[in-house]
Image (cartoon, rainbow, N blue to C red):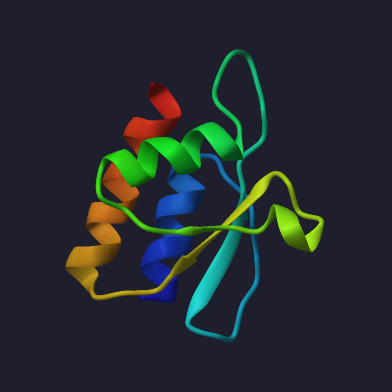
Amino acid sequence: GMKQIEAGLRELGLSWIPSAGNFISFAVPDRDGKPGAGAVYTRLLKSGVIIRPVAGYEMPRHLRVTIGTAEENNFFLEAMGAALKS
């Protein structure tokens, strides 16, 4: 699942912090009118994807997602792509 999420984040043009756990933190930069982490977080929640903002850990541009099943990961990645485009 980790490789699936990493590949999907790469396709979306996002960077992440390497992880050995069951989650991965990734950066959502503000750029050219595209939403930052807070806006993406809200859009994902509205689409039924629950992730965690990590601004409280002094990472205001990062979000954290738990690695799930292949289907759950696909759902997240599709919703993430849509959230970035909105």
